[in-house]
Image (cartoon, rainbow, N blue to C red; front, side, top):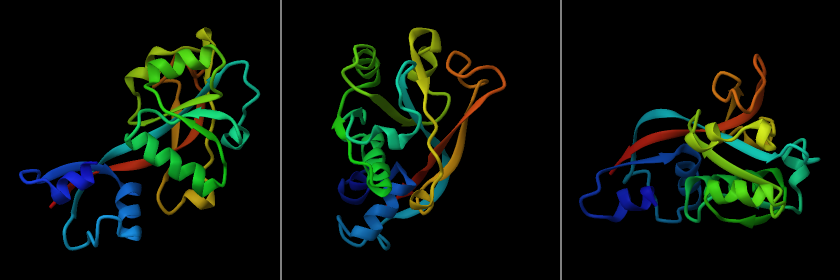
Length: 183
């Protein structure tokens, strides 16, 4: 939506979007040729993929979610868009559900969904609040070839998420760059 707003809304001159979304709009021309309408000003930070399952889940990798119900976060969010893109590029069909992270954690506890996903800069507030002791854990996401054009390798560490990752340990994941754009 930020990309559309910068492109079409009067008075909106700057916006923040994810690099994969910018690249996708360039490839598809969904809102026309943006190369002469939108300029990239600066990369701001990375937004990491946080893939959370129940501690007792048999899910060990993103591939294990095939055919399962997964929360892609709020409708219209960067997380939803990027998560759809990631699962598509990896060829992993899942049943998408959309809810905020607090509701996602509750649905996960009740066993209604297999996983919840948030793509946000680390450490992110909703993920800092959850704990292994409450029955949650992060699942690693490998930086595989289908993702390399639009995503970056990243790591979640025990310093960032002490309640979710044991001291001195880390969890491999992927990230997307957040960029400042202008009309």
